[in-house]
Image (cartoon, one colour):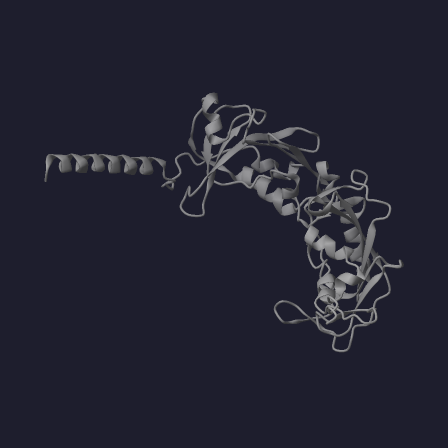
Length: 370
């Protein structure tokens, strides 16, 4: 081998070794064993039942979940109900968290672990404050970045510290900390499956009323009640409209007084066979593609409707579903109104636009004259 070729080989080897060393130093290796195995918050385990307020602070927001007699609610969203699982996972996660090893205690290096003070400019840290009903602080911690594959694939840890200390720690579990209000909620506003819908009326009682009705036992058996002379209905549209509230989710929510809907807001009315009626008032804010759609929902009980012959529904598993075993309509109405009353919800334009359809939108395009 020529001296020039040998030198090139040596340089390539050095570069390869350097890259390999860098990769080894920076890979996310699992921790072979727990070094400390001590509780992060030793006093919290005995006070879990006392936790009555949870405040989460980030650089952009502050949110407080509060325990009430009827369950947990989020103060910043008009006391909208919080999912209990979200509360349980956060509180128990902190109470059961154990320390693996100490990390930096240099305040200047905390940002590398996303453990800097939450009030710092550009902070990525999350501060969690747990308090009892009297306001006594039970725990105040800062949660930083996740340590992936702490004990192998799928078993991650977290970098944490107590809020009044600079000492950072690697802990044995990852926490899903809510970073925006909607992270606390079940985003499903309500669910009225198409199989349960007997009738849908848009703009009821007006000259522009649109009505679709169930015409058979099949899930998609809906038809436009009135078809203009000389026109043909689009058979695909009525089933789509009937399924709009099958599982409608929120993009945001607000108190009704914070986002008042126009007086002339369009109305859509869904009636189920067992007598549940959902009425939606749709407000459109903005123009065309930039428009936002906000809806106020109300639930009420009306006279039940008779199902078409053979009208057992089929669930996704193909098994028959009947009215037996369902919660009484009055109870369903009461539960819905607790979630809906006094609130408006931003929803997907894709779904909201269906509730604004006019008769023309449910017809086929007229054939052009030859």
